[in-house]
Image 1 (cartoon, rainbow, N blue to C red):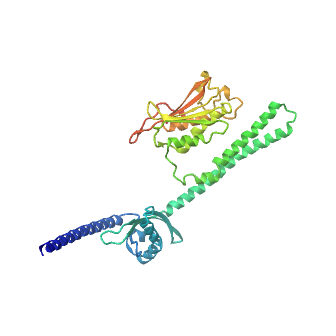
Image 2: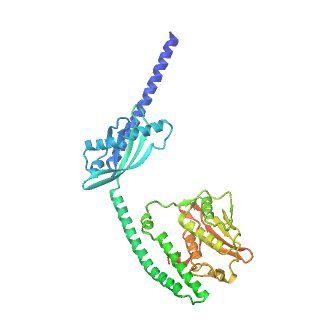
Image 3: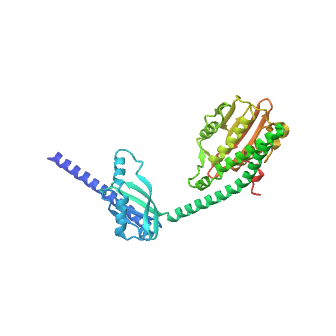
Length: 393
């Protein structure tokens, strides 16, 4: 009898301990819910709690009625309609897929003379202390933000159309005059006819640039997506190498200890790399390799080097090679306006880095980009010298 009594006593103690644990969990849950309600009362966004099984609206903050102009019964109806995907989210969780425990979605509600645009964030909270699964979330009115975005897009499109027209008008005049010169210049010498063709080719390049960068569609798309603020150095170099034509094989030489991510304007750095590679291709013989190196620099930071097998830069031109509009003696016969290296250096210096050139007539040219890496929160190693156009003075 004694062992049986002890077993019963032990069972009773375990049940009492389990009851205490459940009660504490329930009290914590209630305290958390109370805190949630207090925070929700003072939020501009609407906060809600919804039974994920029955779709019953357990709580919604007063901001919802102010935001939508709907009474509580109407809000309950809308909440039930918006929660129809919750069972599928629960099933996915039960199958081991947690990707939809938290979800961001948009919804439209009739409001006055138009539609109310809502952004709804919701999270499934697992059942605890005997409570059912709960959908916890917030509702934000993004109507004004969407209207402002649409207005900005319309203004950008209008501006782009105007700018495109202003550029195209004089270019059309130049193009027409060049065509007339070609048509009536049968008696001109070969050098003159080549100049006419060059004028037409330059006009075509400018028109293509307008289509690429100043089209209304391109301008309207600006700002719709958040620009990336960093890239893996390896990916940056691989993408740059992919732009080199097949006439020049690319040799990638990369250090294994390159950082996993480089903080930068990705489009800007891609442009700078493309300019350097285009120069290497332009000034080196077909079939000669272009070498692209990436490594940690001895002075800190990361260094990218583009090497070619061209004629290099004469010593007396080294000081001017990055000047705006400068074209060296080897640039004769190659298209360009002397802006490429100037633009590349400006992009690099905006990032706190530097762009330098090493040249030997027998080994071609080596263009070196140095970029800082973060050394502490909010601090970077930056270049002491910058292009005058990038300075604040």
